[in-house]
Length: 460
Image (cartoon, rainbow, N blue to C red; front, side, top):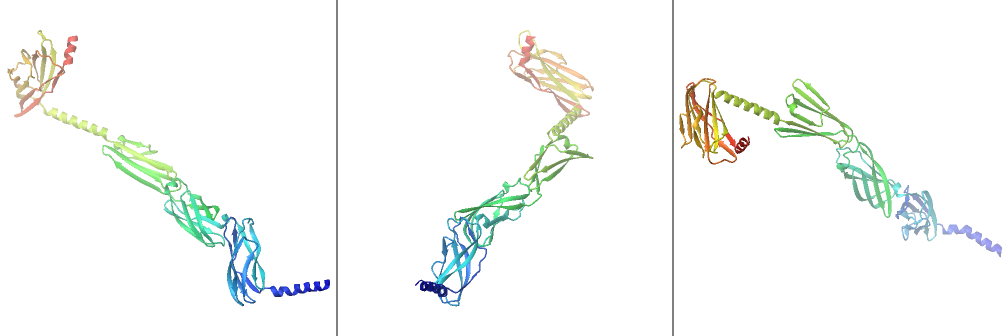
């Protein structure tokens, strides 16, 4: 009996493989397939399957992943070749890295057959590369790229990309090995003081619940840019403002040259002071030199104050005019007033007019007027007036001629029983005379008297 059972088992062992086998010719089209840790997205295999046996409906399964597609059956008739996309989802406990080999099984009614597959277990960080094109301080935008390094289709990626020059967010998808570039507007106020060189560009890319933190490089190429501007304002106080700015990204030496003449330099101030001053003939050359860092500015303020020379010129002109006027006047009248003590206690003033002839003159007629509310004393000092009309307050003197350098003093006293307060003003004295057949006029200065003078005189 045992021999019969052994014979039956041996027979089944020999015959069964021929009864249950399926005849398929399988070729893997895809290569470098990956499975990403933490990303619930399938590893995709493209298989070319040719049915060498009977027409069948085949199902696919594997013990490697958590799930597999295609779901259901795939019909392949006898002699037919069909391309089938097989996706394997990672298990929750997937923790293998590097090359991983496993089997999928293709099962038909007449049996099944295994087929070995291989994939790479990687992290999300290994799937991408980030970088940027070269740019310089004159650039307004820069091209930033994200590249898919693996044979994996990414949908609905959310990226946050940042650097010293910009920040931006972007949502996009990447096909296997695809590279996408984004034109980013540069925020120039953020890198005005940065030197040329290599800078980091960072990205946080989210796929599903997994986040990849990446770092790439971007080259800020050298550019020497020094801008210069100036404005001028003011006439009497003339100001020139020169502004130099390093808009590039390398150390730059700025040199400024300013020319002044020997006159204007006397009234000019500088801020800051120039580092060198050179004189050539009637010109003076001022030089400012400074090594400026990126973003650094140099402001030079030059002020020329023409107020003092203008006042000096006006003073000279006034002196010339007065001198000329004085030289034209042949008769000078100088009037002064002083307090005198009166026996009756009245307010009394002595008025004196000094007449000085610079040249020979004839027919000299001098007229003076009394101020209101005063009376004329009957006594006169010096020359006695030809006419003294107290009612009209008019005094007149006549001289037939006066020699050059001759002087006369006209003096009289006025009084009033009414006291004065403050300032007491007397009219000017006028003269009419002839010189070389022409009629001329002259006028004295204004004479004033202050009430404080009386108080001082009495205290004395």
